[in-house]
Image (cartoon, rainbow, N blue to C red; front, side):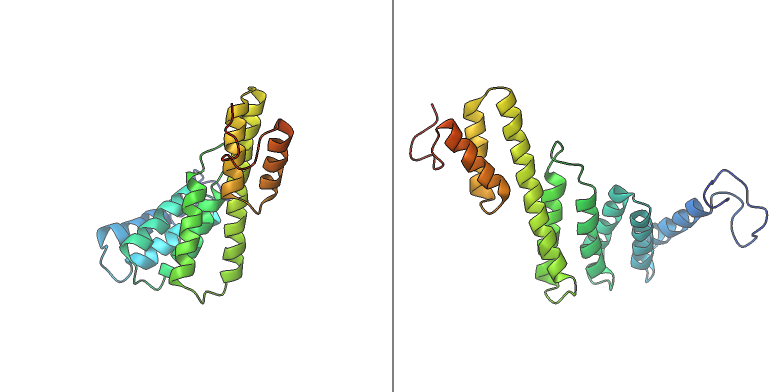
Length: 197
């Protein structure tokens, strides 16, 4: 029980600290890579710390540490995993279409870089599927904006965002919805046919 509640003292297991075993372990890992960043254990300590945060669902901290690992230790044996897991934690920290898309764009970019750097990675197909999911999530965000402008009765803005969806995500179901909405509004899909009045 002392492992789950850090304020309870540990009097039985003398191989662990009296208080906060998990926090002390993270502190030890951090001191390894901060005190000796060029040492042979620095990248191992970073990978362990990032993996711990990933396992506990702290995606922002895991992303920060995977970024350090990718940027500072590109020749590390953990670099490939830092790319793969880093793109996963970026995508996992996305909160939905009402929030900023930058996290999704970063995740997509990182997945594409991973595929370029490691073309024979065994999870290649899954990463390609994830890139398609990211594209769909970005289209959903733009569709959410369309819905917002429809509620505000702003047809010009609705038409602009519908055309943006059609242009940027032509194969998604959101593009079909946008085409239908433009047709219902009496607007051409191609803005060169007739500008929105």
